[in-house]
Amino acid sequence: MKWKRQIPNMMTASRILAVPVLIWILNCDLPNAGLWAAGVFILASFTDYLDGALARKMGIESIFGKFFDPVADKILVSSTLVLLIPFGRLEPLMVIILLGRDTLIGGIRSAAASENMIIGAGVAGKWKTAIQMIAIPGILVKENLFGIPVYTIGYWTLWLSVVLSVVSGAEYAIRYFRDSKNFNES
Image 1 (cartoon, helix red, strand yellow):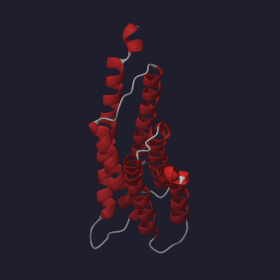
Image 2: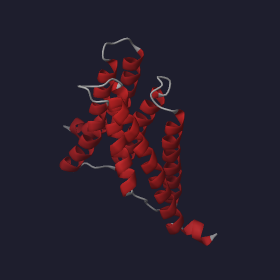
Image 3: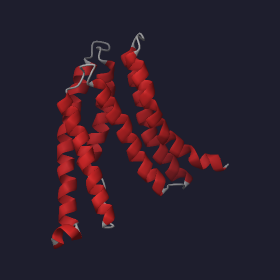
């Protein structure tokens, strides 16, 4: 029964394992490859909700799980965004801003941790992540579905996440610099 305690972490790991599947789907000549890729991304994204809910329900939340979960999210989202650039579905600028923000937040979190500070996700950051998880499948699909321009909707929705990314990055930085002992002492 000890293996059951690893189910949430295995679900988290599945997001990382989805990346090579997405690469394969988009690089082979499958009919409806975009739909298949969107389906894999949606399933992988859904595990982000399930792993945490299951860990809380089973009473097995762990420090490792709390660390591993956002890392798996970043690997899934970042890899997918980078993958979409050579297909001409995203401009590099969008991806650079999104990845740059994530790198900034990682640095701030590391600096904060060295001071025993925890800077939790703000509202803009949570919305940014949710909007990305909605936008990316539309960008993966590329074609219209039932007359709905899902790519166009996904594309402009991702730009909204870029704006929220900048806002949330600024929020993190402001909170760190406001609350940091080392910064305030210099």
